[in-house]
Length: 399
Image (cartoon, rainbow, N blue to C red):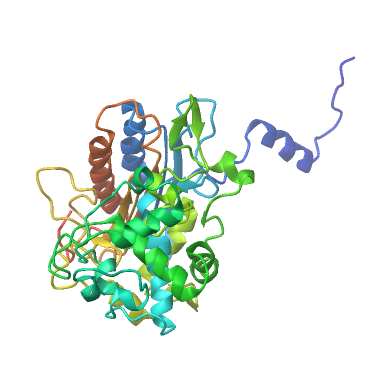
């Protein structure tokens, strides 16, 4: 039987009817912002090329987030979820160094429990042999310790304890303090240092002293299984997406909580962290770190090259694409991660860029790291051009 409306339709009912046909936009979709359209094109081109199946971009300044969006899908299956800046959790890989380990050391410095210029052996008595007694905490942070860049502990040691023993036994390859060479070993040691000085594991200390005060509610080590559906896969295991377990095998051998890798986070959480640094240690009206501490960790050493304490400075433009592009200023600092993550902050232009991908997950193109580097470079320059006022004539390089 057909029903016929008699009289006028109540305004509230009409509104509900219209909403059924014209639903409100998802809170994860970005507001209309024509100037950010070039970023969308660059990120989506990377998906079409097969470099990564999904990505998240967050752009902002010290006072606000200007743009936030997810792209593609968690896997190459178009039925898999679209990444969300708020809820999708990414394996940060080496961003762990600057989002968990570095600020944990900062907190211990502010508490007077760690001295940056004190020998590491005074905190880790097993770190001995050769000239290791000359290696300071600062040298671990700016990668001038003299340790080599990488060791496959997961192949050489069957347990965490045996891996730690090999780490302590690793000899220096260069005189300490003379030159910088990026090394996971430095941050493995810093993770152990935090464990010992704090009297609790790095993950617990970082959660209490960094993640919770900053408001990074979805940042953690070892995500619980209840969150696995929100975690982006970074590999394939027996034909199925692997998620929730850190991709870095040395971190796995160290118990999935390590100073160099193992943290997971979201785009929104990392935006809070970026604003903390651009605001000299503030989150809103709350002070998390002293401004002097922030400045101290961003001061380059005489022999550290492009390395700060934990962070790296933007490389100068060269023949190969530079991840931070050509338009961020020389004051820019940040970090990248092997899984396809990155964070850049430019205090002069007052801009931050977060670009999270799962490049490590079954890329459809060869040399995916190099391919991603080119996308990163284009995205960085497009970001500077898109942010209102960032291309001021008073700031060099000009746009």
